[in-house]
Image (tube, rainbow, N blue to C red; front, side, top):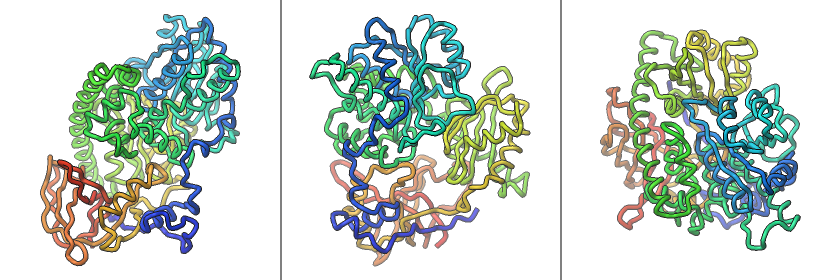
Length: 573
């Protein structure tokens, strides 16, 4: 596949942004559609009003009715969004006088969401209300099971609904049909935040809280972590939530578990950026749900004692190291399978989508493998693992322009019974299949993606923010861009391209490429390309002139701060 660079268009008039921003940052903002400095204001006053999220007041009333004598059981998902949503809900409810506990499904025993099986386990605790966070919108049978046990259900979710909604007492989801809420990109933890904000307001209005009782903004650190880790688009509303959470963490006002996880990742809270949450804290938290039980992660986020939080964080860190080892092996096997596919099928390069399966793969890690292979192939990928009883469970990752959950819905409508269960977002989804259905499904998946009407014509295109002048490749620019976030999905971190001469290149830890490159005026730069190598493929190291697609980073070592180029792609000049 030949990749080509396309530079984002920068409007001629960027005067609305004023002169307060670094010139490079001003160009970057303009290329992302920002026209005025007010659009970058991330103060809480610019949050989309709580009352505009449909059913949020009804949800608050349902919760309020549980305050005297009720028992609330929070059931979350087994990823970082679900863990932060659960911890947020429990911290707030307990601080405001409610009796609340949590239950998180083990992905290997119960699968995803509010299943009838997990409801039967929940019923043993005799809750009066089940609150789902980051799940539930597809749990028709689970809600019916809860009703059969006489348990009310409040669903808070952000996943896209199917044709039929569960018969819960109240559903809060910004992606319900007909919703006019201005920020459908909320993560599950964002939806939980809005529900709790409405509850806090009703509690205050009823005179049920002391003046010193914390507001829900007290836990914006959890909201920021879950929002970034779930890779939802960072529209203005989500940027407000994330930036406010980051400010709390930088000021040292975060839960003990986040502080402990940052310490293990050698990240200084005072200099934290959104990428640190996404690439260091989130994976450690997710490792529990991938390999064992997310209860460890939730307990870490609920713990107030620093020593106890540190011990739980160390367990998460150990699980994450194990996860990395499993993922590396699976990724090597997946890339070998892709190479073998290309050798057996001359037309494999033209496939629009790829399905991969290995009977030895780990259920909890297939999503990461799908993501890595998707980045290499630049097309949608589904990686499957065996789930027992002749069933496969798969994780799908997509590319811009192809709404992966809607692709699965289309296949399900055209081929009833082919897919067992499915759900997800535009860029990521999960599904189950009978093992015998893998080959016919793979053919349907490829055909559906190939015919997708909004399929991006830019599959083989890399978007950048253009070239930097030699004087702009500087620590000062890196500082300005670092402070200019939060960056994330739909508000991408700035990247640039330019021709450099690779003077030296060496392999680090089998998968990374460390380089010393020269640019204009023979200026030399330290550069590194993480996860750019396939250990099983004999690829010559780059040398001479190459076009690099890179980001500016600050390498901090032994108190010294130096500019470093983070290289995402190495192309012919």
